[in-house]
Image 1 (cartoon, rainbow, N blue to C red):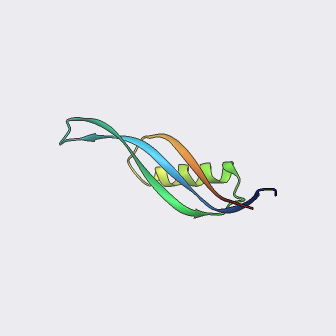
Image 2 (image 1 turned 90 degrees about the horizontal axis):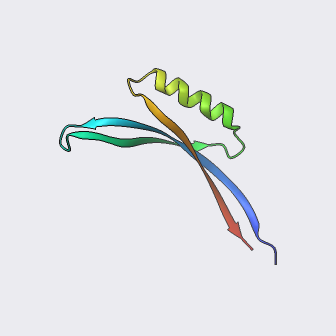
Image 3 (image 1 turned 45 degrees about the vertical axis):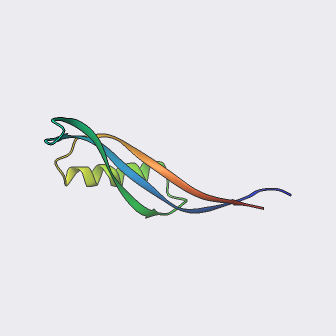
Length: 73
C-alpha cells in the first residue's frame, strides 16, 4: 500500500542571538510563528519574516521553515 502525504499548516521561526546577562554570554533564541499555509511560497515567508524583523531590534541569524506533513496509508 502506498504512503499518502497530507500537508498541514507550516510554521516559521526567526533565529537570533541575544546577550543573556545571567549566563554572561550570547545565546541563540528563536521566535516561532504558526498557521502558515502549506502551499505558501518560500519568498512570501521570507518577506514576512523580514517585515517582522524591521519592527524589532533583533539582528536575525536566519529564518527556518518547518513543514508539517502527516504520513499515512
